Image (cartoon, rainbow, N blue to C red; front, side, top):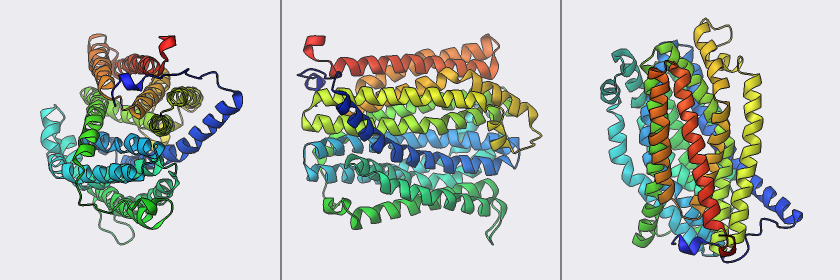
Length: 466
C-alpha cells in the first residue's frame, strides 16, 4: 500500500460525537490492557531472573545486564519481522478476508523458523562480542554462560509474538495473556530451582536462569498453538492448514514491512545496549544501578507498548475497511492514552524512587552506593518515561498504515545522530557519567517522538487540511 493511498480522502473526524470517542477509547483500552499485561509478563520473567541473580552480587547483576544486551540485539532481528504479522492480519480482518489473516500468521511462523538457525548460532559468540566491546573478562564469561541457556529461547519467542499479533488482529488478545500469566510463576520457580539447586534440580547459577527461560518459552509456544487450533474464534482460521504452502507475495510484503521494523528495533535497542556498554566502562556499581533504572523503565514501558499494539490493530483494521478518518482518530486516541498513563507513572516512580532499587538489590541491601545512584537515575529519567511512551505508540500507529521505512530513517537520526553522541559527550566530555548517558537517551526519545507524531498527522490529514 503506497503512502499516497494512505492519505485520508474525507474529513479526519477528530471532532466526532463524544459517544463515538468514548466507544473508540473503550475499544482501544479493551485491546491494549491484555496486550500490555502480556508484554509485562515477558518483562516480569526477565525481572524475576535479575532479582534472583541479584542476590548473587553486583558482579552477577552486571553480567546479567551484559547478557541481556547481547540477547536483545539478537532478539530484535526476528521480533521486528514477526511484528509485521499484526498489521497484515488486522488489515485482512478489517477487509473481511480470513484467508489473508491465516496467511499472515503462516508466513510469520515461517520467518521465525528460518532466521532462528543463524541468529541462535551467533548468540553463542556472546563472550567474544563482549570482549571485543571492551568488557572485562570475568563479566564477559559470566554473561556468556547465561547466554548459553538463553539462546534457545529466541525461536519460540518470535513465534509467540507472531501468534500474539494474530490474536490481537482478530480482537481476541486474552488467551495470550492467560498463557503469560501461567508462565510467569512457572519461570520464577524453575529459575529459582536451577539457580540455587532447589526442588531437587541441579545448581546451575546463571546458566540455570537462561535454561528456565528457554523451557518456559517453548511451553508458551506450545500452549498458544493449542489455543489457535482448538479454541474459538481462532480455530475457524485453520492457522496450520496448508502450512507448507509458500505465499511468496505475502512473504515479500511481510519483509518490506518487517525489515524496517527490525532495523528500527535494532537501532533503538542498539542505542540502549551501547548505553549499557558506556556505563560498563565506568564501573560495576554504575552498571548495576543503570540496569535497575533501565529495568524499571522497561516495566512501565509495557503499558504504552500495549497501547501501541492496540493502535497498530485498530489503525490497520480501519485501513482494511477503507475508513481513514477512523484510522486517524484511533492513532490520536492511543497517543492521548499513552501520555496520560506515562505522566501518572512518572509521578509514581518519583515518589517511590528509593524503594524501587531495593526490589532488585534486596531489602536492607549492603549495596548502598548502587541503590543511591539508581534512585537518582529514576529522577533524571522523568522526561525519558513520557517520551518513550509517545514514541512507541506513534510507531505502532504508523505500522497500522504499513509505514515503516520513513520511521526507520527517523530512528537512525534520533538514536544515533542525536542520542549516542549526546550520551557519549555528556558522560565523558562533560563529566556527568551515568547521568549524562540518561540525558542523552532522553534527548533521542524527544526527537523521535516528535518526528513520528508529525508523520502520522501528515499521512492521515485530509487534503483540505494540508
